[in-house]
Image 1 (tube, rainbow, N blue to C red):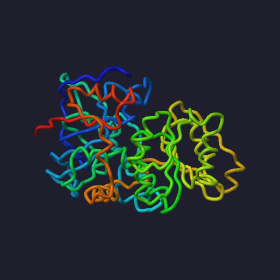
Image 2: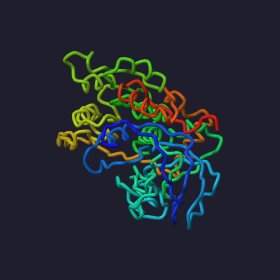
Image 3: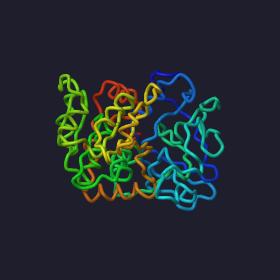
Length: 367
């Protein structure tokens, strides 16, 4: 397997967990744009052969030494971002960037950078984001495993492992959207719609979706979007001006969910002077820098970065699970397709063609 080539289904060896590690039997997983980004990447940290996948639900099969918070049989979701609950960042309400071990895109496990996967000939296979959920079994560091209510349907719990939590968390935990406030979201993919859902839960009165796909108009309404802007349909008027007019001065909160420097600037231009916040969720896909007006910064606007929506996984994901079970959080409509693991390349095709939000990939749905 090389960059951009179809994934291959084959038997692999998954080692037992070492100290501070958990081996998980994956029930279902799903495909995220981050998987596609690194699948296409020819240079480091794009390394091959690699087992992708980082959004999943499973059951603990076994635990290594010094793992006390989890046991075989626990329903869990793995996360790309850890929470040790002991480091300075974990103990602070100001950060979700656990430093024990620190997040990085590694080819191996976070504590020793070695692999727990090998092929039939004993050759090592690389991990992805410490999760590698496109496998019936995987080994994950205990800091990256969150126990969830077993009443959660597997396909819905899977969404809390990355995309839905990232978007909802950005509105709820990071921006702290207030009731009656205005929100503008650039990009209504799965993460952008999750931001809309989070803003809806927080009580935002105006939720503006910006997307080039006209089909997102009706879809956005299902997640709380109250106004829709297609940049192709505003003529010579900048999108920022349209948002300023709708909000009578600029949105209180703007979220960039695509990963383009030009859109990050548009989002910043669309925010209100005095207190407007622009939250960047998208990773700039070309590595381009962002250029912002220093005058507007001086006038009170600010920009915030967001990794995993500011969520502390072990603390906040169980809260989101309860919100779903209490019918406060909508997750069902994110799932647009389902396939078996053998047909995982169909999930890639659907995402690349813009036909799916989330495609659930089942290991064995009949189990």
